[in-house]
Image (cartoon, rainbow, N blue to C red; front, top):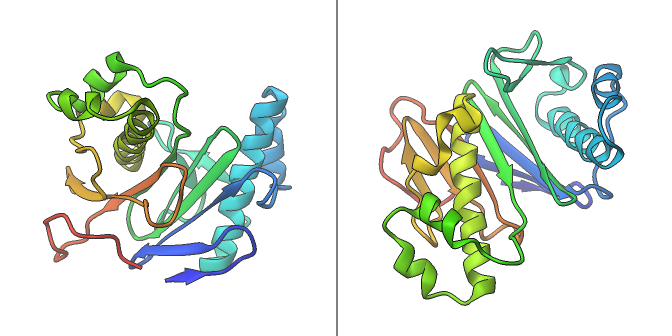
Length: 220
């Protein structure tokens, strides 16, 4: 399901899992005192992206869980964001190169990641992220190779953000084939939203008991 909200549509990618994304200049900027205090010590460019990400998260919450839109954002033990007083809602925010994304999940953990492709794809990075699938990477022209590598990384990163581990979760070990749109990893389903966004953007969320365990196309 997609709900139009000006420049940043709200997408329900699975039951109770919502996502929104847009450019820094297109999304609301957070005026929450806690967010402002957190941004005060950041470089100007980083503060803009941070406040845009928090603003988009709060706007998304306002659409799907209005009671939580004004909550303070704290940190879970491993540093992942959590809504104080709303432990039943998973949240995640990502930003890169002027693009921000936010995700909210009812009753499960969620992770989101966005990544603009590098101008020059790194074969060393590809070897780390793709393991034994370098031949497929090498067969692509540079622009496509860079874009595909960014798609792979967003899926891998969204998985470890959903677990709350971040880089400590070794995202490069999450198996994501080139061109893949969905998959499963350690009880989480990941989706690369290729039909929704031109900038590589993926999300991951906890699979509920009784859901199918095999990869399937994105919902919504």
